[in-house]
Structure formats: C-alpha cells, structure tokens
Amino acid sequence: MTTTPWRGFASDNYAGIHPDVLAAIERANTGHQVAYGDDDVTAALRDAIKDHFGPLAEAYPVFNGTGANVVALQAMTRRWEAVLCAASAHVNVDEGGAPEHGAGLKLWTIPTADGKLTTDLIDTQAWGFGDVHRAQPGAVTITQSTELGTVYSADEIATIAEHAHRLRMSLHVDGARLANAAASLGSGFRDFTTDTGVDAVSFGGTKNGIMMGEAVVVLNPDAAPGVDFLRKSSMQLASKMRFVSAQLLALLTDGLWLRNAEHANAMARNLEERVRAIDGVTVVRPVQANAVFAVLPPAVTERLQQQFRFYTWDQATGEVRWMCAWDTTEADVAAFADAIAAECAAG
Image (cartoon, rainbow, N blue to C red; front, side):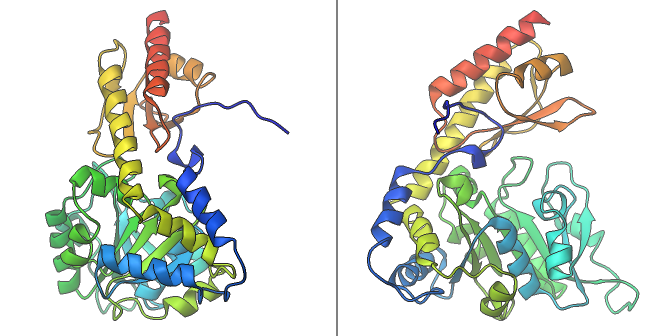
C-alpha cells in the first residue's frame, strides 16, 4: 500500500520519525537484552538524563505523554489531593479525563490569558488547606512550552516553585515540547527545571522526532516516590523498553534534540513573518516556540482546510493554530503562506 505524501500544519505529532532515531532503533535491534528496562540502552539513557538534568535525576520511560503525566502526578499526590493547572492545560482539555480516571485526581483549573500560571493565579485555587470538604491542593503542573505557544522563563518557574513549596505543594512540568522551550530560551534543560526547583518533568520526544515514547524524569525523589510501581500499574511499563529508550537516547546524543527544536521554532517564526504581511490575517499571540496562532475569516479557514490540515482553536473568534515540526521546510512554509494569501485575496 502506498500513500501520497502531504504536508500540514495541524500538529508536530503529524511529522515522521527522524532518520537518526530510526537508525537508533535498528542498532538496538541486535541480540537479546533483559526486559522491562534492565537493558544496556535504558542504562545509557539514564546516564544521558543525568547529564542533562543533574546527577539526582532519574528517568522512567513510558509509552506516551498522557501516561507520563498520569504517572508523575499520581506519584506527586495523595489520594485526597488535587492538582492545580491552567484551564488550557493539556492535562485538562486534551487527555480524555485520564488524570481523573487513571489517577483519581481532582484538577483545580485556573483561567489564564496566555497559558501561563503565576503565583497570584495559583492562589485563586491554592486554598482550603485542612478543609475536609475540599480536595486538598497538592501539586501544581505547568506546561513548557504552553498550549498557547508561550514559554516560561527560568525566573518565572523558580518563582512558581518557591511559592508552591512554601504552600507544601510540589511542582510538575508537562514538557511535551520541552525541547522547543529550551531552544527558545537558549538554555539547557537543567537551567529551567532542576535549578529552579521543579520536582518532576514529563519529558517529551514524540513531538521532536521520535516514533513513540516519553519519560517521567524525577528531579526530587522525595516529591515523587513510587514511579516505578505506578508506571506498571498504569500500564506504561514497556517490556522491550530498549526500543523506547533508544529513541530518547538518540535525541539526547550530539544535540539532535536541539537541532530539531531550533528548526521547528525557526519555521514558526518564518511563517509568522510571512503571514503578518497578508491582509486579512491577524497573528494574535507571541510566537515563542513552534506554534503560530492567528485569526482568519471563517470562509478563508474553511477553504484552506480543504488544502492543508490545521485546527481551529476557537470557533467563536476564528482563531486557528499552525504548528511547525522538525521536518517542516521553507518550501512548506512558502506554499502554505501563498495559499493563505490567495484565499484571503479571494475574500
């Protein structure tokens, strides 16, 4: 069966697998290795994670980002506790209730203008401590980069971590696009996670060039105990883990993670520059990672979606989201921008 290649701007999940990642899977496919993570490849990944996040960091590969978030947040909370998150957070709007169903968590959601939490916003839900009638605030989760394409600075995360810890809550980072955030900040992972007081991270790879797999990275073992057991009971323990680990290890070797993320971010900036010059297009959010948010006339969006795949973010306002990936090319951006211009001119 053959398919006709096509390009879209709906999601960085639509992109294929980076050739270096495919090669890493093939290299891992030699001989026998001990199952369930006691293999040489996973051991090498654990060392690489320590190199990037610090000597206390422990990596637990899982199948996907939802699994990483559910396992991490379950480890970071007790049965009667809740997680505070932005209303737009992926754990709230895009995981099909998995934190609630899989981990039994209550999510206290907080509306934000830009997808980012602040200490003042956290305080709108960080109350009722000791009240038996209220699910107790136990952890804060932030997304880096956010669902709205914004990026937290290291100082912003440090301030949130300090505030959360002062309230006896832990801090989790949903890092599905952690590499894009690091590329945007021009820093390593440790600079805005371990060194800022983050307790655990869901480290993403699927959106940055691998086939499947993420990892729970525990930075403070006291704040997230039992991940190894919870990973199994949450159906996230791979028997042939070396093939998940090989992909993540490939990303962390020779800066592949950074090259992929920098390229995706650069293509988003390229797209922003092109569409800003088009009459009828309004870019409505800062482009800080690999996402562009814009408002178009509904008729234009409808016609464009017959040519290119992308999502309407807000039906009421006509806001759409365009995502760039590690394999987005300048030719892809040019063709898409030309189509937008043509459809806008057509009215």
